[in-house]
Image 1 (cartoon, helix red, strand yellow):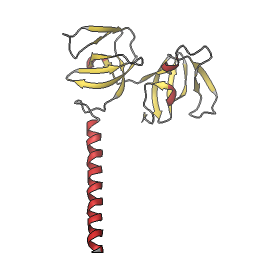
Image 2 (tube, helix red, strand yellow):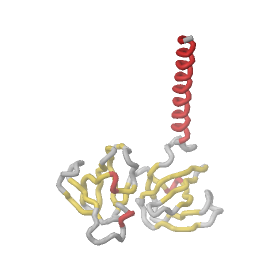
Image 3 (cartoon, helix red, strand yellow):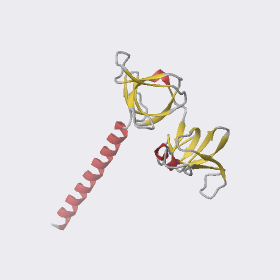
Image 4 (cartoon, helix red, strand yellow):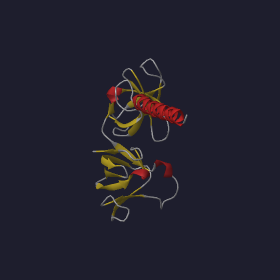
Length: 179
């Protein structure tokens, strides 16, 4: 009797592990769009003038026009050659993929805009909270990102370069690492 209970428990445990593995694989597959690239993901606007449309096609009305190349946006959905994007303010719409670039950029703490004149994001010489501050970035300042290690991103902004805490920017996910 004891061995039957043990075998049943073992079978149940194996089934649980298999189901968990299948669920993890399904989640990993669900995280990729039709292009095979991860969803969501950060990219930048390639052109100075980009129409944000209410649907995936030129037949849909433009609800907004971006006027800044290099602006970071988040791709949240894909349909054919169209990408549904979200900007740092939370505005969503559709853009043709040809107007997007895989170049990475970020915005310094956009959620802190208007919180006071003494609020800054520190850019540091090294990827350490105790490292020398090389620049103080105002919330909303744009920067180009070269790499992130999961906690810090190496960035360039208005002639300054250094490391910025990943938690203080919009343009890289928490824990995301890339070169």
